[in-house]
Image 1 (cartoon, rainbow, N blue to C red):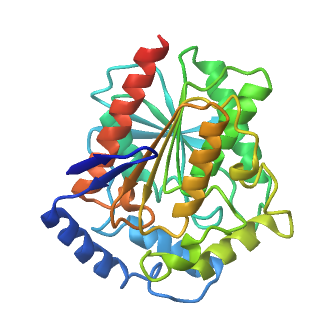
Image 2 (spheres, rainbow, N blue to C red):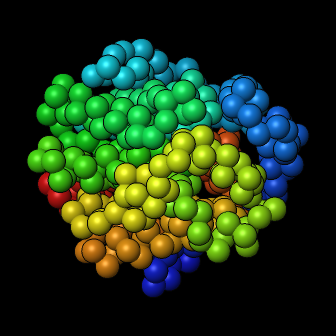
Image 3 (cartoon, one colour):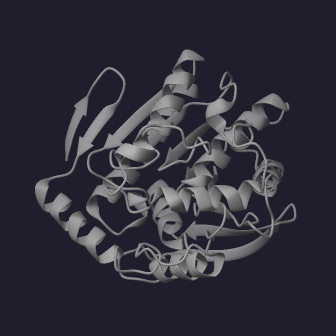
Length: 315
């Protein structure tokens, strides 16, 4: 893995054999219903998302990780506990899926990989999905889950979110800081969707490079918001006041449609005085970490190392 550090971001480029293998993975993924350009309806997208999660392309639940369903302040959630756990401080995870077709079951592979890598229990929130439960239901469930975890554990909480879950992770941390609750220790967001207005130039420039399409983004947004303002801070953290946010790690693929959303949020957070690490994974598409691949493995090791540095700096 080649690592080039610039002034504003870290560019990480996989070795050519790993990049070639990932191109093969993308070609295979494009044959799956979720990415093959089928009808944009909820049933097709949900079955496609589960089909991907069950495919050999996706990370699978690791044998040393137990998955236990619980009720977290009225929100269905699951503990992922690795047998090799070395710490008690929990991690709170919010899955992706555009607020429409995601689930903890669909994310089980990447969650169990995180639990093993961090050596920590991970609580994955099964927040309500749209269009049955529109905005702000997901936001409310994310906050309720954090408050439940805060009640049952005195340890610092790190929040991790993927795609739509990245917006929930950052928004939850900001709400906790403003409402006088315990401040989250850190937020890690990968392939995050920070701007539901979809105004960044990468939504056009990266069309055809990413696995997902602008049409899918618009469909997810419209199902979720149901007429609510996409520019509201609770919907799009890019429009929030980021002052007071905990240390933030943002990981994004250079081929992602929402690449510029991530870059804009990082710049705004830095102007607000937030400690931010911005990692760009060269040629990687949306959700590259959830695929079984060495480049995604390396991204997870970077998450662990970054959080350990944050812990040492704040202890």
